[in-house]
Length: 374
Image: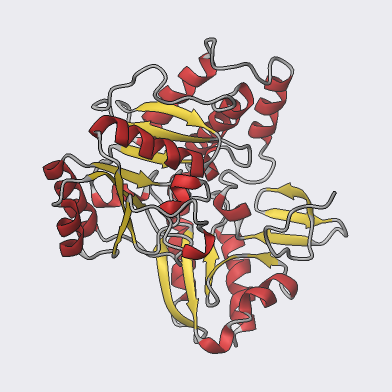
């Protein structure tokens, strides 16, 4: 049996990691400014993370959600405290796409409505409902396409209000910062208009913080820059530092009814331990503050480079839109300078490094980037 072809693979296999570096089978060291697609939040093989996971494995790795699990209770309390949403409740699942599926379901149960309003160029996942709310027809099968999803342009307040004024939407979903689209931010005015329009029409506001959350933007959630609160927040990626876990944070105005949401593997003992380790390290090492400071340092160091058409983003979620002459730069960074970066389309490099990177790490990236573009 062969693997089903899903992604075009780089001819590199990382086999070891530490902090913001990985090593391949030949022993070549790479600077990881990709974080496995924003997943590695506290760094590869952080000692606290490894110790807590090892200890939990000696106790219990899994049991079903039909019994009590005090790790889930502890995770909900700590996450609520650190993220600024202590009154929301926590539903645990396994991935970002699954989180968004359950966000739509909870919104539909609450409102009795079946339609979702999403933002142009959005990416919310590859499962049925999540991909229907993703503005990319090439990854939607005929089964996924539905009239129950409408797209409205990012930062077009009048179009947003016009759509929501119909009163037919269960929820509006917005990414804290659009990642796959190429690092585009909803403006503070757009967030505030969305909150007001949702309140006026009985629509729930879902903040998809799967990529932009967990400190990556320099705040715990990117939408917090706008000073608004979301009714439902979807998280995953950095939540488990590589162990599969996702969740939605749900406003207390949404009634929880037995059987409304459910999962087999979600919130298992190892997943909760991974998430607790991440929160512990984030708090003790002030990684949200570090993301803000080092992210700004990187942005400042990139300004004025002739290869760059536009810089976008916040914290350690940075989009570098390249001029046409530099479209091979991502390959050159990988194969000549041994630096992993992300991409979006043919001309945007995405920087999504672990939140613990230092200015020394940033200087190594800047030196490599500037050397290749001299």
